[in-house]
Amino acid sequence: MQAPAPVTIGLLAFFPLLVWRVYARVRRMTGRQKLSRARVWTMLVVFPALIALLAFAAHAHGEALLGLAAGLAIGSVMGLYGLRLTRFEATDEGGFYTPSAYLGIAVSLLLAGRLLYRLVEILRGDPAAVSLALSPLTLLVVGLLAGYYVAYAIGLLRWRAPNVSASSP
Image 1 (cartoon, rainbow, N blue to C red):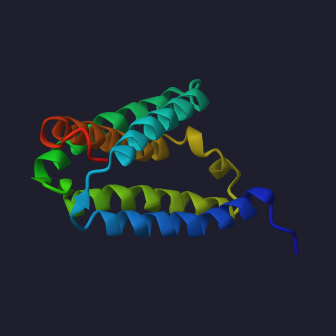
Image 2 (image 1 turned 90 degrees about the horizontal axis):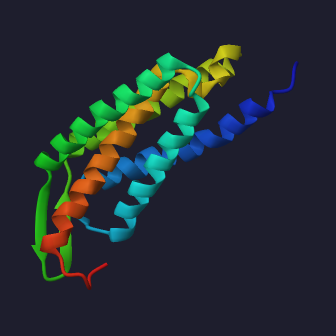
């Protein structure tokens, strides 16, 4: 019996992290949340950096870049729609919001499903599956998630500015 490749071992180690993050995301998307400046800025830094890295990795592959751009556009529109479905509250304790559970969960599960599919392809031994960054469909899904969260974070910042005092976190 052949020993598993290092990529396979790494992906198997990555799988529990993926399951945990999807669970945490789904749990967070189903209720009222305190508006956190740190979380919003984290989204505004991490997702654009991820997109820049993926765009650089796929710069020679036009279909992949097109998938990424389409995902960003669709995700941005979904983020704006998600903001319209969000309930905002300014209280003495600070700002709170209740996001659309269905939309946020759907976006997160779409990415998790795509990554799980790619993991299964890699574990089956498909050599083309290792090149995750070059798949137009995968980049479309990643772009959709990034566009959604960046647009949503910008909307949270815009709502926060006039409604929550500068002294709250």
